[in-house]
Length: 171
Image (tube, rainbow, N blue to C red; front, side, top):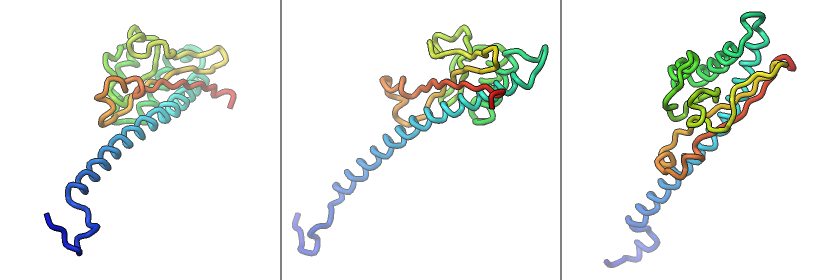
C-alpha cells in the first residue's frame, strides 16, 4: 500500500477499531467496578436506615404490639420502599415466615436467623433487639453487573453484608 504525503499521521482503520474495542472493554470493567462499590455503599446505608426504622417501630409500639416481628416488618418495609421494583414479593414472603430460596440479584435481604441462614448469610449476623431498644441487623445485597457476575471467582466480591445498628430513643 502506498502512502501519500497528505496521508501521513492519519490512523488506519484497524488501529481505530483496536482502540475502540480497548475503550469498550475498559468501560464495561469500569462500570462493573463502580456498580460493585456502589452496592456495598448502598447496603451499608440501607442497613443503617432499616435498623433505624425497626428501632423506631420498636419504640413506638407498646404492650402487646411490642414484639420483634413488628420491628422486623418495619425494616422489611423500609427496604421494600427503597427499591420498589426489586424485592417486594421476596420480602413479603420472608415477612410471613417463608424462607426465600433464591434472593434475586440486587435484592436486599435481612439476615434473620432463618433455617436458610447458613446458605444465605453464613455467619454474617442476625436481626436482634437489645433490652434498651437498640436494633442490630445485617443486610445482604448483591450487585447487578454485566461481566463480573459471570466470573465465579468474583462471586464473594459482588455480595455485600453490611451491619446496621440504631437506637431511636437515644436520638
